[in-house]
Length: 130
Image (tube, rainbow, N blue to C red; front, side):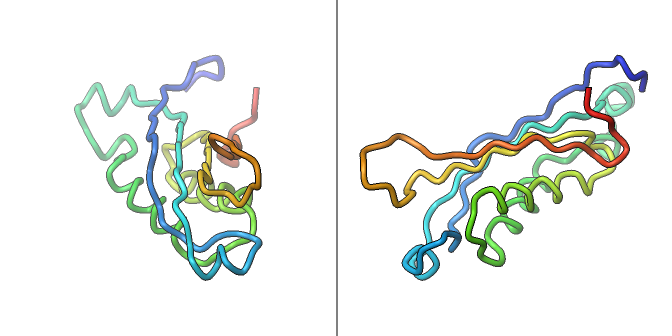
């Protein structure tokens, strides 16, 4: 793939996970819903040319992997959770970059709010960010 090639994107939005992440004891004990959005940068041209699923990222399998990672061992911060998810995505050789957004809609905030989220952008080790 030429360096100036714009990557294709695969997007998964609103993956729902019930997990026990958070700083407070009650968050760890009771758990809560987290929503995850992914935008994966990859080159799908070979997959499309050959209509070959093995040359792209299987979004159904990826969704299962991300939910499993997000519902595993509790962490304090959604930043840590987002990093864990990014590493799961980038373990796929076809994934060149990923933007992960973790939403915590029931965050323990004492004023009215719509959402709390963190978004991170990570690159495969062999990719130099532009």
